[in-house]
Image (cartoon, rainbow, N blue to C red):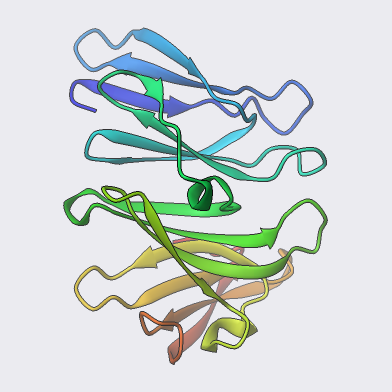
Length: 193
């Protein structure tokens, strides 16, 4: 996204949610383009090399949370492989130097409480995804995954747990395969990373 800033427009949490990404010139600081995505209530936006990745929170009743990709040069929507289209993403981070995206999501997000939380590792060059389910892993105690970071040097995964959104949540550190919990600490209400 050289000389451009891409902004995910959410429109708020009401029926008139927005589904556009605004492209702003860093030279003029004016909107130069608007890209319409198939989903509303856009949430996260991450840039990796020549791609812009966007998650949509949607309204949870008709559409799943989703992942979209924009070609940063052509400013057009990239047709994603089925494995990436089927990801229900709530948190997203990117590491352009590694050609990687990391995400948290659920198997289904149409009905609350959600079920089957997962950690996703996406190769943005090959357009492939590896999914590690929380179930049966050291992350099975995480109630409401809310924030995510990955240590690019060790591969350790940090997950912020929003819990019940009222009481203090936790921040966990796991091994890259989610098989080992390295530590956890109680943080504030709805911690994010």
